[in-house]
Length: 574
Image 1 (cartoon, helix red, strand yellow):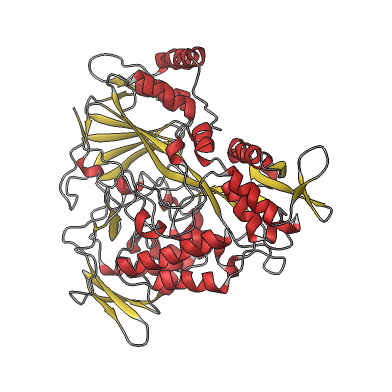
Image 2 (cartoon, rainbow, N blue to C red):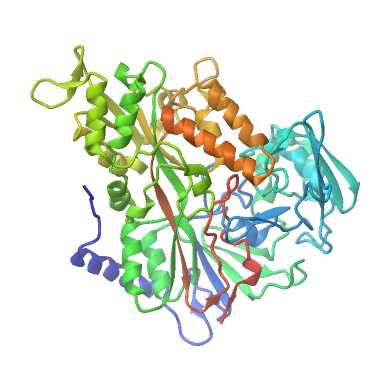
């Protein structure tokens, strides 16, 4: 059963009418420029970019794990040793080349340790004119390991035993053990930071580092554009860096507007006041309205499954009902889900349905998915598994019963995923499962104990990556009273076998070993079902005609978030 939320004609008309009404505030002003939100005029060759809110920091690796406006601005303003191209492949950025086993710049030692050597390109300079040096890389590693700084992930930094400065352009990174992605240190794993601006603060007042002005208005990066002005609540004004190491940017200026409201953003795009909308969570009505408006030209609409992979996590510690501990029950729940219907109803596209954390369009999909158990929508198979497990209909409400216990499951979620959870609940009811839907209140979202003690099944969404699997499934990440309920494995799944497979993946060397390890993890997850995948919730990005060379990522890297601005130096308008 497919639930479609395609807007009826009168609703589409109302939405467009609302957008047109907003256009008066941001419509083009005629020759000489266009009106901006602050009353200033943008030059004709200025690329006006909209983001979904004002950044709290210009360094996404510092602070919250929740993706925000910062992440897609990062490579407009800054650079890393390594980035990822449109196909999700690692490419050297500040580094001259990726460390390689073939040329000896990546060495494996008999004791299990490693060494990777990174060389800095010539001409890489901070926006204040200082050269980037190997000392900056060593300092960045030290800062990433400081407990005073709220770093999103220290996985790579903590595996590093030492960063040896060999000369001003060369570092040798010594690793305690094998790490599969040691040759592709991105901005999330090790953000390059200016020693000359931050070392004194880290040494003298480390407890104040989180509030340092560097993360915001005093930011100095390595990217093709530098921060010229930060107008609080309105915009960031960026100017091109003429001596950028990959060549002068093709754009004259970038103006970044803070637009949180989807209708206002749509109006600004349709009216010509915004040229590019960086990826944000897709709003179904807005997406459909823009498709209608741009059916015969106007720009490109890019939907990408990079926002969240939505999945279900059954409880393994004292679940209610107890039958949830039976793998046949979890398999029945997986077979009973009409993923395509949920994806169409919530995301507007049935093709977003996915049992796996890897999109079918990703080259990694086939090597990982090949040969693992699958759970396509088969309600009759779900009903058969429930019968085999001893559950029978009794009473008048069609809820299955076994030895006097009713098959009733509490399905908890946040308001963000309520509509998706409601669709799943309806699918389960069709096969005799009683479902109590619980929406976690806003006040309880950050209550670790409350979130970790659900009795049935949790629906949630997270950025799809290998790191997600590790955080949600590793036994040592299970929250408990003893660790103050810290940890993302809220289903309390514990499997020494899967822990070993996760270790194998992180330590794999070479793509074939990585694929084999991830495939083994996928097979184990499909057998035990500690995570039941449902669909991808997409991001939406918009690019108006006339803006050239914007090449959005098509594939999600395995350990990093794709950056929309990875080639921002090539963007141009006119």
